[in-house]
Every structure is written in structure tokens, then in C-alpha cells.
Length: 248
Image (cartoon, rainbow, N blue to C red; front, side):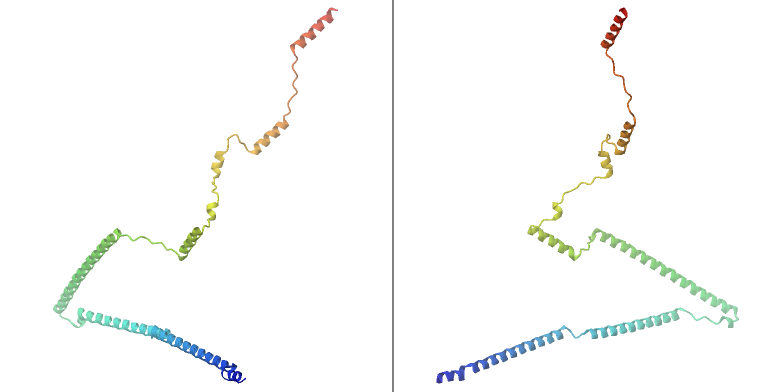
């Protein structure tokens, strides 16, 4: 009796309940630790992906566009300033001709301006000649490049959809399984045109409507009764009988 009480006290149902609770608590803690570890790994992966989020990318794109627009405006302004500077260097300030009464001075101004105009025309002609020469050289080089490319022509590639390969694989799989194609079992039928059919028909064959007309004509024409021929012997016998009757 004492042994039974000791077993119940130290190793009975109460002890088993305690072990189950402890085991469940350990499992719960293990699951929590596993979930925590997964969350930490997911957070590390997100950090590794990059610093740029979609919102930051949008802001950065906007800033880059603003910066590019500012640079373009600055370049245009610099080009305009350089153009004005070059025009100021090349152009000569015109003198006030209305206030000059001396004929010699006016003639000298005219000669200077004429010489300046001639030099500018010469420069323009030279520049045009150089540009035409460079354009012809560029065109010639382009022709040579095209000729060299023509020796190694790239083949024209066809666009192949994804589904064609899938259908081919399915057909090959069906052939391997032993399934037959229904089209292979179909009979081949020769299609003859109307002209070949008419040429194959015999000339003696006539349409039905012509036969019907002939039958109607035969019914309308009735043959006349023909006298049956009398044999010569019967005629001679009748003549002899007549002669005998006359003699009597």
C-alpha cells in the first residue's frame, strides 16, 4: 500500500501532466525562436536589396531631370554668349556716313567695306568647298562600309513564339507514347475540277432533257399500216381457178 502511494505521489498522473506542460513550453519557445530567426533573416535580406526604395528612386529621377534641364540651359547660354562674342569680333562698326561731307573719306570707307566683303565671300567659298569635300568623303566611306557589310550578310531571323516549341514537344511526347495522328489515318481524296469531269464524260452521253424530247416525238408519230405481201403461189392458184370457171 505504501509503494502504491509513493508511486502516485512521485511518478503518477500529476508527474506526467507536469512533463507534458514542460515539453509543450519547450516546443513553444523553439517555435518562437524559429519565427524570430526567420524575421531577422527577412530583414537582413531587405537591407541587402539596396538603399533605394521606389519613393527614393522617384525623387532621384526627378532631381536628375531638374539637373539635366539646368545643364541644358547653361549650355545654351554659353553658346549664345560665344556667338555674340564672335559676331562682335567679326563685324565692324559702321561709321556715321550722314555726318561726313568729304568725298575722299566716303570713297575710302567704300573701298574698305568692299575689300572686307570680298574677303568674306572668299572665306565663304572656301568653307563651302571644304564642306562639300568632306560630305563626298563621308558618302564614299559609307558606300565602302556597306559593301564590306554586304559580304557578310546577317541572316534574317524569324520570330518564333513560345508556344510553337511547346506544341512540338507535346507532339513528340505523343509519338513516343504511341498515340497516332488522326490525319495520318484519313484517306486522301483527289479533287477534280469541273473541266476535268466534263472532259472525262463520253460524247455519246446526252442530257436527260434531250432524251425526253425524243420520247415525246416518238409517241406523237404513229406508223401507217403496211399491207402484208401476198405470195406468188397464191396469186397463180387464184388465176387458175378463175380460168377454169370461165371454161365451164
